[in-house]
Amino acid sequence: MSTSCQNAHFPFPPAAADLRAADSGRTVGVHVGDLVAVTLLGRDAPGGRWTELTVQGDALLALPNAANTATVGTQLGEYCAARAGSSTITSGGWHAKVNVAG
Image 1 (cartoon, helix red, strand yellow):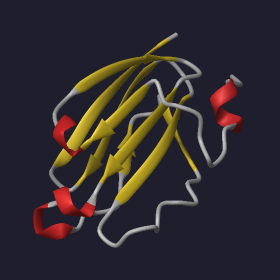
Image 2 (cartoon, rainbow, N blue to C red; image 1 turned 90 degrees about the vertical axis):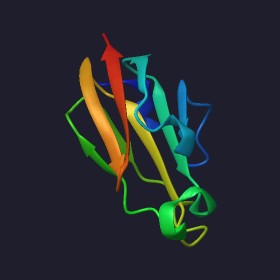
Image 3 (cartoon, helix red, strand yellow; image 1 turned 90 degrees about the horizontal axis):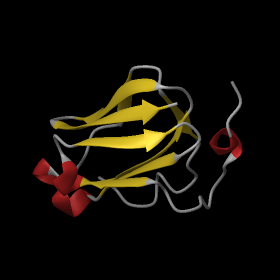
């Protein structure tokens, strides 16, 4: 399946869901082809540093993000909602579930 967001590149267009530190534990819904952004600033992290973002599930496809190394302790992620289903994004104790509708 080919979706328009799979060809997105930095700088990315506005995301359908923009997740921040305060969104930990949240579940969001998007559609196939939407972008999902994660911005975890070091100042909001326990100990001042977030661990690397990981994704469980196959609904989201991680996109290369040239800005990810901008600030020590910060984690930035851009994801394409590639197929219907769900994925969970985590960084240490932070997590958010993304449900993707076809």
